[in-house]
Image (tube, rainbow, N blue to C red; front, side):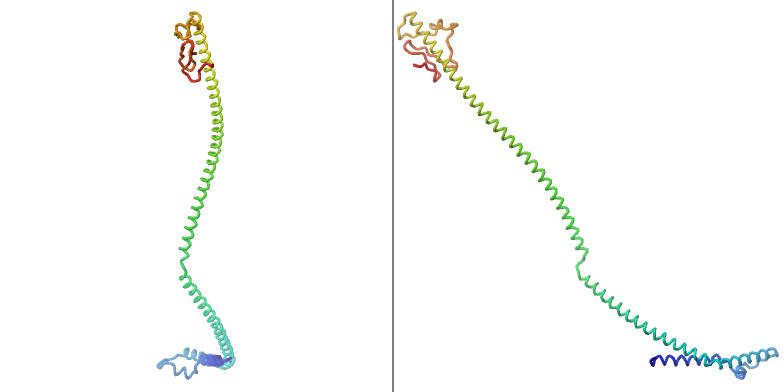
Length: 269
């Protein structure tokens, strides 16, 4: 126990003595002095007053007899109060340490708050990130649409290429067929020209034969030239032969063979 605790115990003992002195009733002489002047007491009042004084004296004697016991109890109570004060001081120190820790945490929180205030606003960054995410989704949708369009165009291109290949094959077949037709046509034209030439040459021979028959029948000289009317009786149906290519025949003199205006239609010599 330190000096402060001793002082607290001394004060407690003094307070206990004061309380004991207050519990001791005053003596009858003192009460007589304290009674107001002019107060008159009858027999009943005197008897009651005497009985009260006897009780007070008895109480005072009992108080003096139990004074050491009350003093010890009050001393123990003072010690208990001193211990409670010491414990209270210890609890106050713990509370003070707790309070200092709380103050330190509060200072740290304030410092963190200041640091957070110095940082850029997360709301703006979050809004920017959301906008970037929305733009990314839009770009992905656009890319998907472009990919779908590209697939469709690729399919159309492949179909067009296939159709083009088929068309080329058909064109080649048509070209081959056309070339064949041309060849056949040329062959037919050649054959037709040869046939026409042969027919025309045969007509020229018929005309030449009619000329010779007319000359023998009418005994014409070599320089005589018959007319168409002279030769008609010698042809079938009395009709002059016609060139199949539309050529014009020249009868000529007996010494000159007949000719056709179409090139190539010539009697062989």
